[in-house]
Image 1 (cartoon, helix red, strand yellow):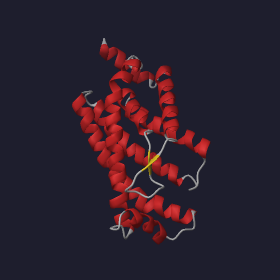
Image 2 (tube, rainbow, N blue to C red; image 1 turned 120 degrees about the vertical axis):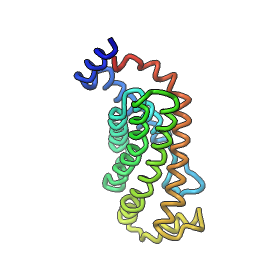
Image 3 (tube, one colour; image 1 turned 30 degrees about the vertical axis):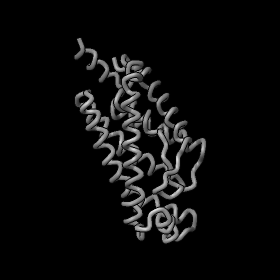
Image 4 (cartoon, rainbow, N blue to C red; image 1 turned 180 degrees about the vertical axis):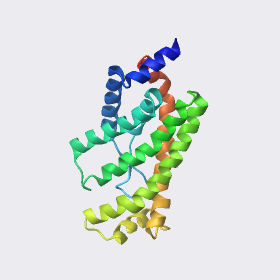
Length: 209
C-alpha cells in the first residue's frame, strides 16, 4: 500500500498541499532573514540569522528539492522587500551558500529518515557550507562588494584585521572570518532544527501521501 502511494506521489510531483508548505516555509524564512545578529569575530556586514531553520526543516520533511525551492522563495521575497546593493550578486551568493547547506543534509536524510542520518546530514551540510562560503566570498562576493561600494580590497581586508589581527589577505579573511561564521551558523541552525523538527513534522506528516 505504501509503495502505491509513493509511486502515485512521484507521478503527480509536487501536490497542492506540498506547494503550500513550500511557500509558507519560504515566507517564514524570508521574515527570519530580517532578524540579524552581529558576531564579534566577523566584520559588521556578516550577521547571523535563523532563516535556514525553516529551509532545513522543509528539506527534511518534504525532500531536498523542496528545500531548494524554499531557499529560492526566501531569497526572492527578501530581494523584493529589501532590494539589493550588489546587483543581485549578494543574493545569489546567499542562495548558493544556503543550498550548499540544506541540499546535502536533505539528500542524506532522505536516504533513511533516522536521527543518526539527520545528524550526519547536518554535519556534512555544515562542512559543505563552510567550504562553499569561503570560495564564494573570496572569489565572488567580496570582490563584488568592493566594486559596488568603490572600496579597495585592502579596506575590506582591514575590516577583517580589525576583529582578528591575523587577517592580512583575502585568503585569511575567508579562513578566519567567513569559515568560523558559517561553521557557527551551521551548528546553531542544526541544533534549533533538531529541537523543532519533530513537532513541526507531525503537522505536515500527510503532505506527501
